[in-house]
Length: 535
Image (tube, rainbow, N blue to C red; front, side, top):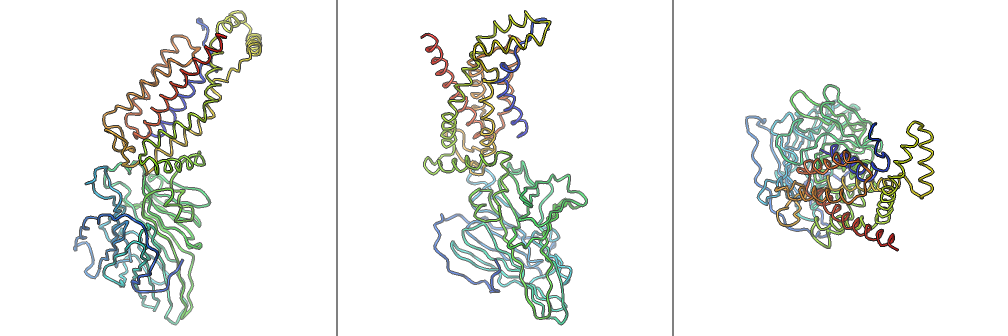
């Protein structure tokens, strides 16, 4: 859908503003915490709205779980998480503030929900000390509740036959989607040991639910200042490997699950597709060597939450790069911040989109005026250009020379009609990206029947009106095309209308308002030019 939109936009700009100028009509004939057991650390009070608790978590069938395995539920202001003593892994995580549908009774967004013990996420491997994902850890508590502004720990302990103690400590902060995870290894044996801790994240290769956020999903890794988003079909077999990434995990259109390096704690990450229909992301720490009596720690930051620009940036390590804003990210980010800025005052993202569209129109008014004036001049010059073509129809070089002299004599720039419009392309694409992948628009109401700016218009009213405005705008635009070319151009509004039927209504709103403003702008410029010529 996105590629079709970009192609259509390019075609629109070229056809509406540049076609007639560039292609004249042809002739008609041709950090690590100290080990503690669920300790509460006082923190500054946080101003946070009370949220409803997530629905009760369904128990894992006992037949699929070892009799010794236990589950520990963690309740935090933003999420509910369930951990297993098998591997000290995560079996379920539900976000409390986000729902799958715009309906207030819709089910909450579930980022992790794995019933198969062999596919639990955040399981641990360390072959040098005999630790594998099936190992059973001893938890520090049976349950944990973290209030707003609080910090608490959940520790899992495992001891190898050789006397190496591994504590896997999760540190939760109330009001923060980030979770600190620390491996604390102590060698109580008599021999030196070495191990590289591996954290294995899992994700279904095929979505288990048909949710709109899963239009795009898959593994994401940020390494060497580049965001790698791999296609699932390319991960069969050996998969893909990355050296020293800052973070790695999985993402869909609006949410991210990732392991983030702290102090170079990720040596490599390897993503692959497994035969059982799962994706695996194996994050490997640098090799750890422990002499007898020695202890060492490896620290990570986990993130399970929304792809909100401000929230991600606060986590550090360029986690905000998970929002792929394309080639024009440097423009898209300020536009996204502007969208959030205006929302603070108008409390409606639809109105914020309209305000941004108006501001952009004002900023680009001089370019639009210059473009429209140039096209009008080219339109008036067409009869003389046709005479030149007829006169030198058998001598192309002489014809081109005569046409250039005609341009110079009348002070007309042949590309003046489209060049100013081309300057606006980066801004449009940037805004397109910002609106298309902004979680702020997800389930955000506008007015009347539009109650989700990230979803399509349920009654297709705005796309149809948008198509009508395109027809009006096209008729008002100075044209140098022959009747056949004009008929071909009339098909573009129809194509755009059908294409925009399933686009996010926030994007359609921007395009519609932009068209209306362009019509007003062209009408004003037309009157100004007519008044100037009358003098």
